[in-house]
Length: 149
Ligand SMILES: CC(C)(COP(=O)(O)OP(=O)(O)OC[C@H]1O[C@@H](n2cnc3c(N)ncnc32)[C@H](O)[C@@H]1OP(=O)(O)O)[C@@H](O)C(=O)NCCC(=O)NCCS
Image (cartoon, rainbow, N blue to C red; front, side, top):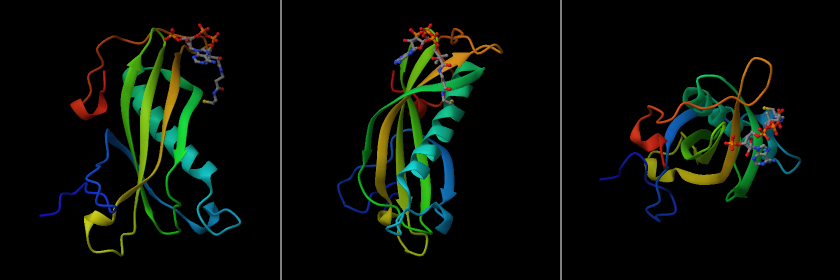
């Protein structure tokens, strides 16, 4: 029986991390080719990763770097976009969060049609009200799938 997180390529790869954001790719988010603009996807990842980073830091956070960004497949208008996030590394004031974006056409019947479209490593820094780096609490309390440390 199909599991909820099977991929459409049949590789057995499944989303890794906590589901932090779910949204729909709209026509206004297209590039000139008619596919979804990569900058929009990057932005959704930043929003999702930032949500997890705030839960870890209990403070405001800023994005400091984006690394290993890989666009695996195009996203199409109407696709459901799911952003998964997990903490890959905790520093003193910074944290690295591994992000994956999976897409699914909800008009398709089976969950196997879900496929990975983008992945990257985002680094966030916890800041105080003045925008200065601020220490992160150790041992964040997150569900196991949100932690890779
Ligand atoms: C992120 C920011 C607060 C860091 O300030 P800073 O004075 O450089 O701070 P520090 O040198 O003390 O570094 C703080 C942490 O950030 C990390 N860091 C800073 N610059 C980095 C860089 N270029 N690459 C990787 N890590 C970096 C440091 O390693 C350190 O991590 P640690 O405490 O876990 O060891 C500051 O550069 C900033 O505000 N940048 C703009 C962020 C922004 O506007 N983002 C876009 C919108 S969210």
